[in-house]
Length: 449
Image (cartoon, rainbow, N blue to C red; front, top):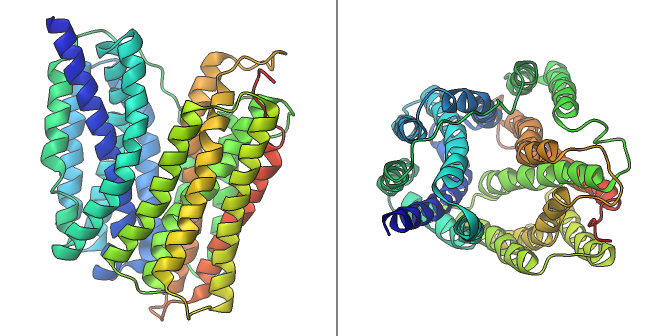
């Protein structure tokens, strides 16, 4: 009875933590342009996101190493305390440098916590309880897509972005304590998911991308960083991922560019409507809710009724990618031709919700292809595929988000009024990434086909 009660507490707490994690992602996205304007640091968009990305990637091997040396419950509480320190540091920041220090701490702690949360599910739950907990954790994003933007928008509007960063922390701390107190003490041996060579390439590539510069020198830095990160991507993915024509490699490659396109757009949408169209926190909340809820609802539907044939997968992914490409292309056209007589809030709610529907129709069915054994062996072990499925999204975000937000930041380098060209270029990159994803996903198919 005590074991069942302990498992229930862990399950409920893990779902709550996943809900809070979803809220945090919307919170960070919504407050970024508001915080940057408040601290006169809009030229530092790329630096803020780049430093957070470096910290998150560095936290993976650090977390794996610590899990080999420290009890999981103790590591869970220590990382939570570190996360709180980072959040408070950013919330009290009088200058962007202090905010970035807090962002680095939060990124490092969040990455370690992501690994320990997986460990908590593995050690504290088993069988059907584990499956249901993971299912409810995924479904909690439907709630996060509503609660997250609403919380961030209204707390920012009524109080400030600083309060929005810390008011939810007591619930986070409580949930972490419950998980830690109910975990069994097991020895865990975890290999680092990143080699030191690849980690060095990632840090170097992102570092070059976010160096504040202007003109031709900035372009050279961006291209050089992109090449180095591209090399890291090749090393991290299974051999031949981007060149061999096998269904699972095509799904991995397609997922790399799909998530790169969407998550770049996810950052750009709030920057664009705030900086170009001067909308406030309330409107940002509506826009982010629309996109997040659309993806979450379609994701639940596709999870309940997965595409099991080549035809059904192609129909869903083709429609999904068409919606993502179309919505991003319309944003480019709207910026270029300056169609200013429509309400930006209404337009972006519609366009971003459309992109969310597209992502919902494509993402989970593509993910399902990863873990199905193909009829003809493609030479990828289940361990390689499991590792790649975790890394692919983080890697694409690491590669493309600092790149595009650094381009946007160039509009503010000379303290001039915001120019649209930097935003237009960044949205064109979103469209190009989505088109590359289409190219690869046309070759992907469920194994049972």
